[in-house]
Length: 264
Ligand SMILES: [Zn+2]
Ligand SMILES: [Zn+2]
Image (cartoon, rainbow, N blue to C red; front, side):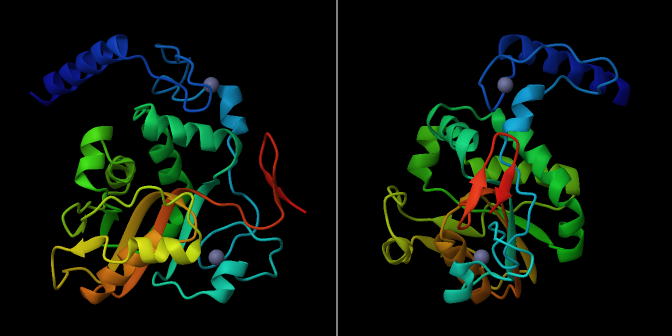
C-alpha cells in the first residue's frame, strides 16, 4: 500500500511538473524537467543563478542578523540604538540585487514556486542554529486575509511549511492574526512603520502553550513587524522569541557583488 502511494505521489508530481514547469527564482527561466545524473530531484535553480544570490556569509549582528562591518562589532547600529522585542534572529540573504527582483516576482507575479527552493536553502543554512534554539513551534508572520486571498498565499506560511517538513517542528497559523492591511510599509521610516503596525496583529490564543517560538517572515527591514508579533507572543506567555527571514536589509557599508556580500 505504502509503495503504491509512493508511486502515485511520483506520478502526480511528474504530471504537475509537466503542466507547471519549475522556474528559476533568479532568472525566471523554465528549469529542466529531468534530474541531473546523481541528483535526487530536478534542479530548483540554475547553477549560474545560484551564485548570484547575495548569501550572507560575513559577520552579522548578534541580535538581528544584519551584516556588520567586522567580527568585533557585536550589534548593528540599529540594534545598538533601539529595543527589540525578540531575542535574536537570522536571515539567509541580503535584500539586494537579484533577491529584490525575486521577492518582487513572488509577491506580485505569483511565483510561489520560488519559495520551495528558498525554504530548502533556509532549512540547510539554519538547521544547526535552530537545533540550539530549540523552538517548540514555527509561527509565520500573518498576512491580512484580503491580501492573502488576492495573492493566493502567504509567503511566510509557505516558507514555514518547508522548514517544518525538514525539521519536524510543527507550524501554527492560528495563534496570531493580522487584522488590517498594513500595506505601503516600504515607503515609511522607522517611527511611521511602528505606529502603522500598532494594533495590526492580534493574539488569538492565550495563554500560549509554548515557551520557545520561532517566527518566520520573508523580509526584515527595521524589525517593526517582528517586534510587534514577538511582543504579543510574549504577552501570551512565550519567553524565548527567535526569528528567521529569507532576507534582510543590508547593514552599512556592505557591498553586494555578483557572488556574495563583502564588507569594506
Ligand atoms: Zn536562472
Ligand atoms: Zn541588528
